[in-house]
Image 1: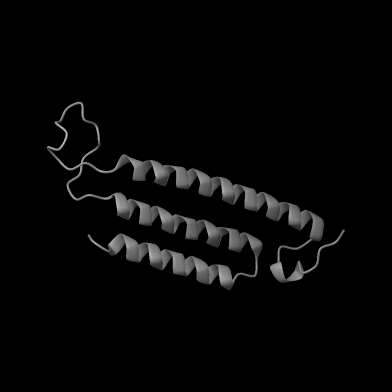
Image 2: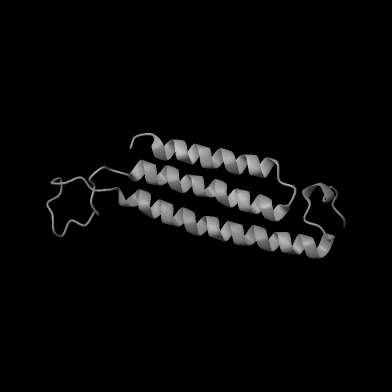
Length: 115
């Protein structure tokens, strides 16, 4: 397995950054940020993966008898998913408010602040 999850994470991040740079719509930009966030899931799962690893429940096996996966990495991935969903929802809510107040979601049209 080796470097495959890390290469996939870099590829997903680069695709998301390209979409973000070329975006002419704030909703599209928020979607690209969500995809960039998902590249961290791949990276974290690649860090925590162990070939032949089992769940870290030591009630039925002796510690050190078999390889187990790292539960901290799995917990960090789940936390990352929740934080990513929350940030995406907040950014979409802000985009809706920008549309209501300024009448556009084009980032180039939102150049100056109005008091």
